Length: 283
Image (cartoon, rainbow, N blue to C red; front, side, top):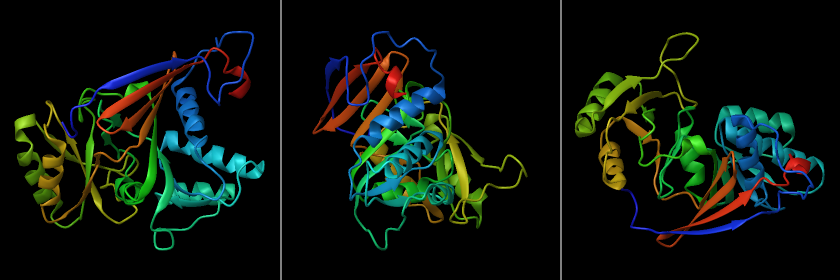
C-alpha cells in the first residue's frame, strides 16, 4: 500500500457542531446528494475568517463553495480568499461573490476542501474523474490542511478498487504512445487504458490546461502507490496522475447512519462518528 502500517481509533458521539438538537429522530430519506452536502457542511466548519481556502471541484466540493459563500453573505465569515482548482469552480465562486486569487499570490494555503473519487483505508485518494486533477493537486499539495469530503460509496479497500478510472493527464502529442506505456507498466494488475472522450462531441476531452486524460482501469491491486507514482511520472509526456498519496489531513464520510471523520495522526487513522439523531434543524 502507499502508507505505513496503521491502526484505527474509534470514538462515537450523538452530537457535533453542525447538528442541532431536535425532539424527533432524523427520518427523511437521504439521497446521495444529501450525503454530499452533509459532508461538505461539516468540512466548512473548519473555515475561519482571514483564511486562504482552496476551493475544490466536483459535485461534492460545489456544496462547500456554496456554503462558504452563504456564510460570507451572512457575515459569519470575513476576509476569505479562495483559490479555485478549475475554471468551473472559478466561475461558481465569481457568481457567488467569493474573493479569489491564485498560487502566485498565495503559495501556501491554510485549508483546502475537495471531494474524491476513491478513498482507501490509509486515506490515499483517487481524484480527477472530473478532469481537474492537476490544478487540484497543485493547490492541495501546498495546503496546511486538506479536508476531503465524500459519501460512503467512495470508500475502497485499495486504490483502483472501485473498478472505475484512475486518470492520468498527458500532453496531446503521441497520446497513444503514452497510453500504451501506461498499460504496459501496470500489466500485472490487469490494466486497461482508454482516452477520455467528451460526452457531447465524442472528441478527446481537453483539460483546463489543454491536455488529454487517459483513464486507467485495474483488475487487481497495483501495490505500492509511491512506486507506482514514481514510475508513471518518469514517462516523458505524462503531466500528472490522479493518485493523491498522503495528502489528506482528514476525510469526512457521510453515510446513511451518520458522519464519520477519519483523521491522519502519525501512523494511525483516528475515527470519530456522529449520528443524525437531531440534524433536521441544520439541514
